Image 1 (cartoon, rainbow, N blue to C red):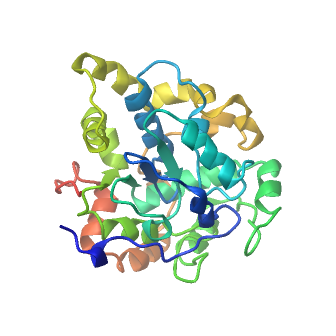
Image 2 (tube, helix red, strand yellow; image 1 turned 120 degrees about the vertical axis):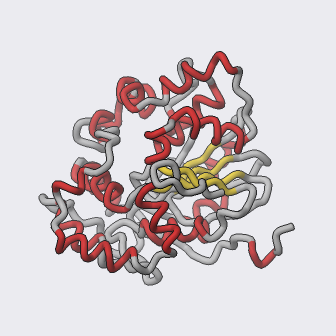
Length: 317
């Protein structure tokens, strides 16, 4: 029996150009709901796709992935929180919802499942730079308009190292020390790491998904309580592959994704590879990473850098 004091509680409010954690106030939980939470560019869409395959099978989805699995704390979403909550209420299947906020900004319920996806900080940065540098003028307009809190979303620097120097050493919220101008990858990871012992919290690593996609998909299916016929696994695993996701990008995300990202779905689902930072970040740049990561629990740092399978570590719960 987990003591009440050991359970997560909502103690933070995230509001900036991208986020508004108060939009979760309209959420009406359903036992068995799955909340997929990542900091950014750590495998969010990949995990959403995996859940969609487990729920619907390998055939065409009834709607885009983004409509089926909405990002609830997205400040600039065209629908109100109540409208999104009503759409979720109408879903008859097992629901899986996207979040980009830490566990201490999410509502916590013992009968809801929480999946956190982790990834090496340096790989997250490289994917984030590709993502950020693809923003169109339309995206900047909606990010900096409306009821935005805090400073404007700045234009992406031309060179990744210029962004790295701020992203790694400056926070966007007073309780964070890195992640500007978005939010902290490390703080987000810590918020889930400290509750990995809970039976309704699952940590999955990007590197493990790449090394053993089927094994990790089976692990996720077991966690969320979905039984899959053995003969269906090869098709599901193939559909979860990165090339398959790129092929199906417009169907998964909607053909109008080009309004938000230069290059559309191909740019959003860019490479899916790790280690690109090795050719970009200098030893001096990496000193910032050493300084920031030295504050992490050593086991968390080891897991973020290598996952479980490649590092030979036990998989965290």
